[in-house]
Length: 184
Image 1 (cartoon, rainbow, N blue to C red):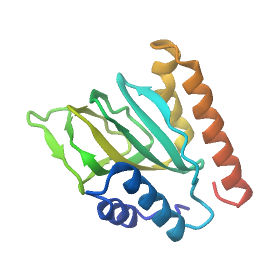
Image 2 (cartoon, one colour):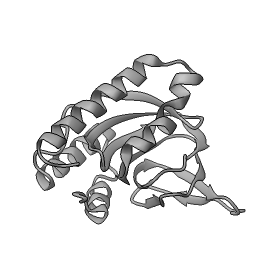
Image 3 (spheres, helix red, strand yellow):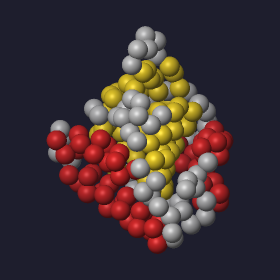
């Protein structure tokens, strides 16, 4: 059912660590396209996303009903709640630093370039980017159920309907393309 291998995605992200960001993003996109031909969006369209109090920007590299891959990050820092999803969310750090903690933790866990963080389905955590962070993010599970959490702040807090439109447009276009290829 799932096309993408988290270990391979981590390997690709890790190989890009230390490159200037534009080169890193191009390298990741090229490697993903070579590994999963015909399933990677090669036209970046950066979209602001405010989710659970945290602002970042993302570009969709792959989207279907069961998986997504994005480049995500912020050049100035942010913090908030992860959300609680019916999907596993893998974050493969490319640049910067992300701090996280689960309910009941009294110490933070720090993720740096080359590290992999996992948010298991059904769990949530707090996270913080003090300065900047960029990551390759991969989710597998029932992706449409993630959209309300990922877009609620844009609807009810900052009223950024342009970003909501762009997200639905890009996600919808990529999902339809994947369904036409027989992938859910």
